[in-house]
Length: 147
Image 1 (cartoon, helix red, strand yellow):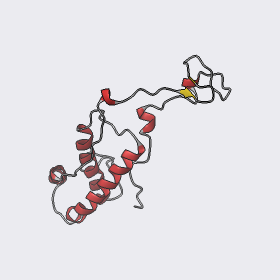
Image 2 (tube, one colour):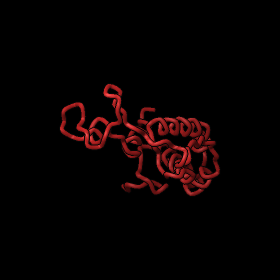
Image 3 (cartoon, one colour):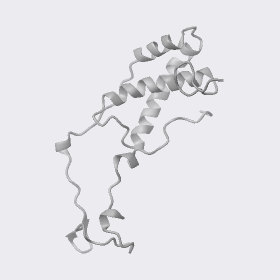
Image 4 (cartoon, helix red, strand yellow):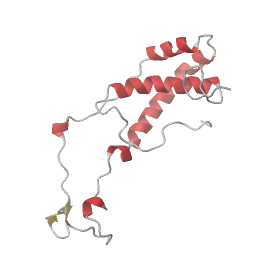
């Protein structure tokens, strides 16, 4: 038995799941191609995308399941479906730099200052650390088989 399905993706339990994942792949590629960063930045963004894709898939599902179209024809049809994705990105020059302030002492936090927790690390490597885009993007995206 082959590991890949007719869409060239990892085989799922049913043709419907294979088609859903192919549909999600086509639509996600379209979404990410229009973003400057080319990635999902936050769990909230991932949840919003999942909701939009699931709603759109529900509209397409019956047509796909009862269709005699080949996987190539289905992929072409998936590409023809237009989802209106909300894009909200601030221009890089619009963002203000974050300034760490210790309100108890009434001063800015300097890079050499040790963290208040006693770890021995600088504040910016411990509790004052700003998570990167990859860390913010970690989250559950694909629905369970039960959904």
